[in-house]
Length: 267
Image 1 (cartoon, rainbow, N blue to C red):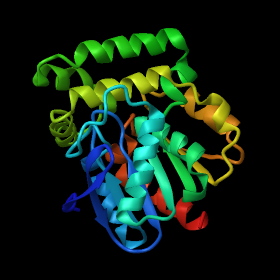
Image 2: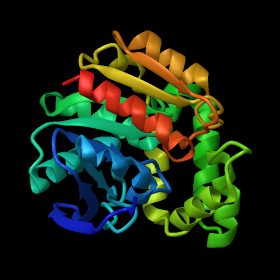
Image 3: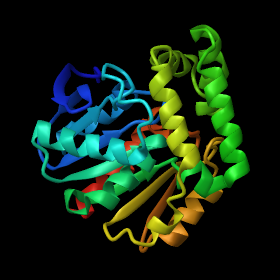
């Protein structure tokens, strides 16, 4: 399916671009860093069952950069403003990678607006999932690489998002998306991942929660998924074979089927 027409709304931090399709319960899609709403192209097929809304987070895609020093809590507030601006009262919230950390933060502050959570290939922050040493190492790399020429940056980052079996056209699609990343937004998103430990939050999640993980996720391996499953009450874990970190793009049919089944049962 075509990624859909881009719409825009204004919130306090500036302009937010987004894509919207379908009718029914709202399924809100939150992308990871270096990405934007284009990574959800295949998930717009879920518009036959849901109103699918995919934003470009402030600092990504066609949206304005947020204020320097923004925290994950600031992004959660911006997301609440986005809900109001587009008329969303309550939604199934699906967050991938950094978007999953944002989903956790949004749930903490705005629980009444979350019908269910789908956390895909994400983290309890790098600090929470890997400890301070790895978190600091990852942040150092992000801050260093953000100044690379775009072609070198894409070559350094895109291969780690997929399995070795990913088709060249998928790698090319992601390369196009990553090539338009916002250096400032990327640095701030990386900082929120490095500084956050949401481990204690997980036990307080009281809405239906699905964990979706690529079996060969190299950035957030299955041990992270298992820690989420063990901490979130009644969470379901589905592992997607033949998928890496961006499992929604590499195995969209399986990803979509799992999301649709879960959200339909979580109404």
